[in-house]
Image (spheres, helix red, strand yellow):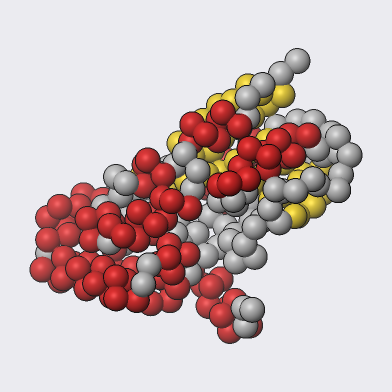
Length: 233
């Protein structure tokens, strides 16, 4: 169970990123009733506040809604468990008459993150959490699907590891790491070794020699992808 103090600390590091929220809002169009998937209570939610939003956990079981009950559905980094991906997406589509909007992390793109140089086990564990993008698209078969990379802004406030693409020092903060589930997927020794490697690279100037150009880049195309599935006639 998450305590009040833990929840408060988490919100310091993980808040809905406005740039992502705008992308989701545009994809939802004029939908008024929105079904939102939120499998983790700590993950920021991206359904717009000005819609009638119904929030559920993982849709891996039959949902208690009639067919076409909602104008749209949205899931932000909260796709069903890998084993239940297809059935979960099928349920989302069944109860949605309009677009299904998925903000996802593409595991193939994660491998290209600079963090993989210093914390390869962390990045690999994080990649295993997310289904491959082609599998997500295949599960949406029968819909018109568009996949669009969403740039991560320099000031990103949704503190997953790539949010700090230009601010590597933030990952030396234990609170920032606790807020990112990826760091909890490896043992303590591995996490400590990874942090030490990153700290050494920053203090020696090696990080800046290799990746310093990122510090002045206003946005970065990382693993975040917006998948929009529109029903076909």
